[in-house]
Image (tube, rainbow over all chains, first blue to last red; front, top):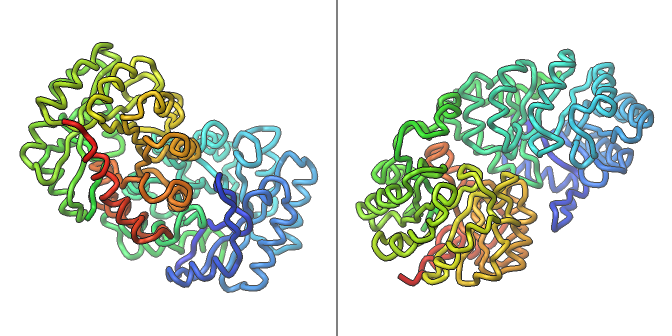
Length: 247
Length: 263
């Protein structure tokens, strides 16, 4: 089973243009690329400020297509106690399975003690995986992800985009944080190959970051890994994320 | 036809980046001469490539010798390789004087800067004499971009209006800062974006805003080897752009830039 671990639903802003992505758009892309399921998360303003609306949008898509979608909610930590309540609501009432946080769009440093520790503690309490966008300086760098992972070893944390362009750091972060999950979208092929070659096939999660990247090219990035064995391919493309979410 | 506008020769096995590469086990830790590069192009299904020094992109190197090497490798495969030179402005502030020799004697038709590795910002005034020389020959100049504080796209285009005969090629599309790469290309007609480092929707949006003629295909090979080169093609092929745009990105746009060079 192929599961895309990172897809945006709703109004995604890619600087010059708002990409309005519906559940049907996503399903069409999934079908065209042989993808069975996708992990959805809110995007754009839903991620930044309209968290409740974003979480409900995700939950609606999951309710309509429970066999195709897994939902992540979000909560901007600047809402304080309300953010923590929103996290509880997302899991307990909306049926979402985890969280997506984006320190750049939501305005915090990825390892900020005041803003982020409570989010991670709440995610642990809810036994929910937490995906953090990673790889944008200065607020979303891999060493911050490492700091968080080492502080909260019991949390199920996902480093987004394999740290994107911060490949120098990811080499060390992967070594230092054996329990950190690593999502593959956006990073260069050569850097993904390094993760694979150094024994990380068991924690890489194929993701497309659709609509920013394409499902086709992100799938091919994994499938082109030199020496990739069928069992490893199955793990990266779906088995690992199924294990993470207990599917 | 596919022409790769961003390929490095690796002239020494142990370059200054060797320590990192030893850790990653990457291909930069190997020698890549013209013959090996042509083999890689064959493997990727690429017709031609723009090549320039990789090992020489550091301060205090004998950049003239690296340029001579590039010229030599290109002469061995004139149908497959096009050569760009390098200049070490950190080690030699007078390096602009190399440009006429590079073009007239060595047959190199552009310049590559890697301001992060070469250790000065891409808007340094030391670049202006180079731009003045490059204008005489209407040279394209490709910059590594996307890694602040030395290689921001906005730094690269600082003097694009003052030197309209120079083609400023923003290598890696500006990576995370592609917004400013596109802004630069919108402001100045002599700014072109190179696709390695771009996300698929970034390319789609750039084609929509800039038209089909402002983007060239590039990979940064031999980094990542043939799988990386093929994946860069997959990326362009998966973009929702017209077939004509795809063809122009893969070959015609860089051919047009190279055809403008006055030798």
